[in-house]
Length: 120
Picture (cartoon, rainbow, N blue to C red):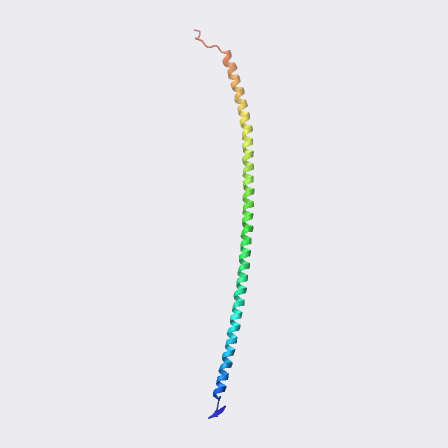
């Protein structure tokens, strides 16, 4: 190294060594940054896959709940329709029985009646 007018000027070989040292340090920083970047990407991918798995599981649970609810509602509607049909059948049986009774009564009345010319 030399001193020129109160300034320290490194020799050419010292400059080259300093450049290589800085370059080596820069390569090390880049390598560490790439490694850290891969780790961050890997961790983000794991978190994304976990979030997706949880979302799929929640969607399945929600779907199963909706299916169960729809089945219960359908069973309730079917039971209500069956009950209405049973009540309707009971009402119809009573009406048929009454209609038969009225028809029998009408036949008896008509059988006692004589048809003919009116007496004047």
